[in-house]
Image (cartoon, rainbow, N blue to C red; front, side, top):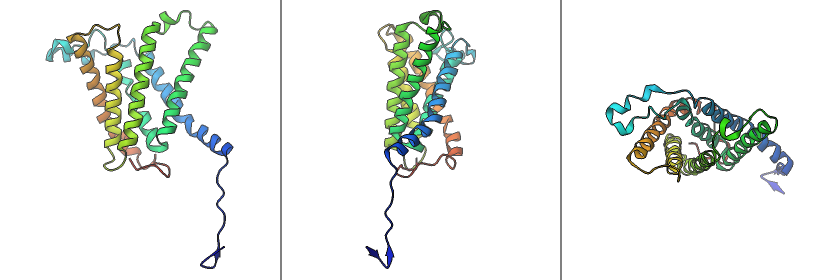
Length: 226
């Protein structure tokens, strides 16, 4: 047919193989970044963070000196990475990246255990119950992060990354620290408050690099401009 004297050229859409390969390529960086964040947090879990001991001077219940470490302080970077992935690729691909990252980590642990690089999982990694609680709590926090970012993305630009990181991180802290093995008392409430404060500072601080990366990491067509 003719449209104002110009022949319409049929638009060729990418086939399923092309879409699959494209999705795999897009998943590489988010998956590697998430794995790196988890591994860094794991390797820093034995490094104490005495810088936060001053919180005990405000309220003894807020004193984190007997449990805080640098692993806790870098763990919120997971939500920053997921925000950037959600901005660029949307909720579906980010959720897929989170799932694949967990599978890669689990597969790596299984391989290391089979090859003898890990003598005992509970001694070298964590007790099974603790590892399961952490994985479940983080998965819930990641899901909240993805859904909230997708819901809030738009104008103003800072709402989606801030609330997604803060709420997702706080949900993780609450779910992880209210597992059955924990004693529900005022000390537990203080610990959750400290962790929520760490996620709040991260959520606020990551707005600066997010702002700086907005021109570099642009949403693909079809996604809002958070």
